[in-house]
Length: 239
Image (cartoon, rainbow, N blue to C red; front, side, top):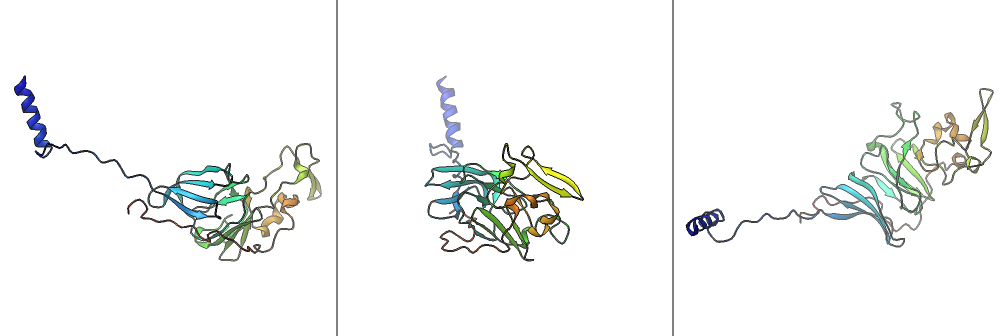
């Protein structure tokens, strides 16, 4: 028995390089975490992942909010991004075809859409990523500007009170016939759809007061202390 044990030990020592120490498997390096955007001194976006892709988290240290915007595969938005708004937060990504917004200071997040209207020259309803010049969120309203000078925007930051539960609804005429938007089927909620206002004439949304008297240009942002672009270090975690 002793001879067998001795032989086993000799074989193990040879496999270990004959120095009496066994090779150990090194643990993988920790996944890098970096701030990719700062709204101000207490609000920021945090990305966890390699090669600038991964899970995105919104952090507000003043309100003690830490919420998941995207669980995986998020890639930063590369055009100009200015965002002083606090209650309404909109986060675009690389593709920008549909993005995520919060209407409660970043506590919960929802996917928004572009209105299904013909807004682009090729007949599509939303701009191509490479045509986007900037995205600005101010006064709880989002504005996306394209190279062609088009502005896609969300509605004013409230729902039409006539469509609240128990409200009278909205009546209008179409081709001489009476139509109605009811509180039971109010349509799009504020901030959840982006629209080219020039195509609004074809939509029933034009009858809602939150889609009326919209800005004709992006409101000026003054005294903004946040970043004007997202930033990401591709080599994070490897240095």
